[in-house]
Image 1 (tube, rainbow, N blue to C red):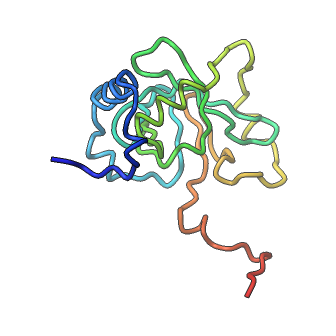
Image 2: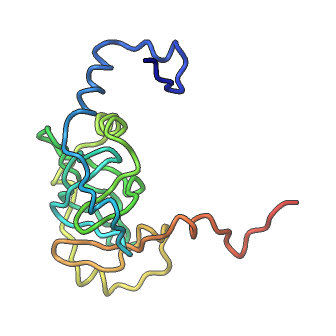
Length: 179
């Protein structure tokens, strides 16, 4: 039986080792628990040691969140990659939603593996610990990216507002439409 993939015949001829690696990534790892798929939190909540899921299964564990304490925004996520002994930095734009301590990404496991291959590794020496009380008390003059703005924080979690996909599509009041 032949399946259509959307790729041209020339794109489908890949190196055997590359297709084996992608197949191995797809087969590895546990699936996503169904109860988490249906749940969507009101805020994006990054919890220490929470599972990180791609669209087709678990890919890692959230270890830390890098925060710009001056701007009060989440800058990077530190993820321990499953099956590897390294931690990488990934942007929070890859997060679709959270459910409990689980973080759901907008990419699948193959795309995650490709991102991880080129992602910078976490180096503890480059970062300092943030004082949570100071972070929450410092007044901000408007966040650059509302989805990254820290709204709540604790010892083992950081929360940012969950901007719905519909509100992201709405025009700002100061923009004009061309006829």
